[in-house]
Image (cartoon, rainbow, N blue to C red; front, side, top):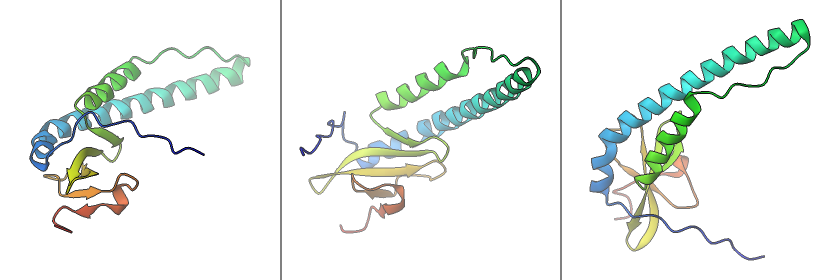
Amino acid sequence: MRKRRRKPFQRYFTVAEANALVPDLSIKLLRLQAMLRRLREEYGEKETELFQRAQSNGKHPEWEASEIAPEIHKAVDELHSMGVLLRDIEQGIVDFPHLRNGREVLLCWRLGEKHVQYYHELDTGFRERKPLWEDE
């Protein structure tokens, strides 16, 4: 079985470059979280309405396209075009490809943190992140 090759990163960030994006990322993630909440509310309202209609007449009307979904896709694409990796919208977790001592790792930042302080290996995630000052 052949090992699947990982797609190369768009770019690598220095810690300073990642930290410079934190204020903008904070705004974008808060906006994205609000859109996601609106979508869930809209979906919940439609689900309730459809369930009530289906119970009364046995018919399932077609879903109407959400106006919020394309906005969410556009916001996510905007983040990806910056070269960052959006890992979790709800928790606001973003990774930045980074070269640390000549090897690829991911700087890891979470919404609410003032600056990037952690990294993790490519094959691990948020729970395994380590302080940047470790192993230097």
